[in-house]
Image (cartoon, rainbow, N blue to C red; front, side):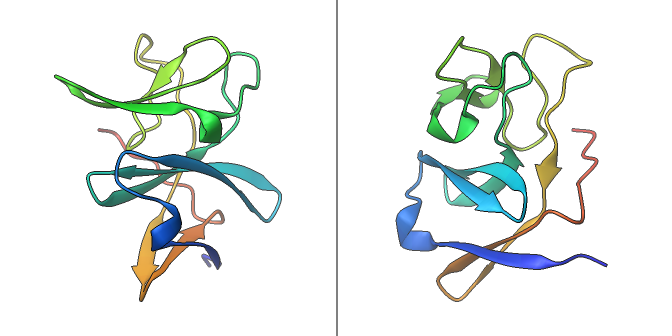
Amino acid sequence: MAEWHDVAALTELSPGQVIEVIVGTEVVALANVAGQIFAIDGVCAHQGGPLGRGVLSREADGCRLTCPWHGWQYDPATGRQVLSQTIRQRVFPTRIAGDRIWVSVGAVSCSSQ
């Protein structure tokens, strides 16, 4: 059963912004993409860089989250690394309740997008 965690206020995450939060034992990068909130494993698959301190950018094919250490890029909605079909960060379900952002780390999403 999914356990939901209250992780941040909506006011802490403006559109186009990404922040790092700790959810249980997980480091999670929260990204606000045009008002839609995504939660992705916050530890870069390359060398453990902090994705929650990365940069969101709009591209012709969608949004990208760039790791601040070595520039690896991920789709925050699917967790897919931009240049690889096999490297994928875990993504976690999110929901908004009132003015709070909630994340469930017990229910890892298996998005195929």
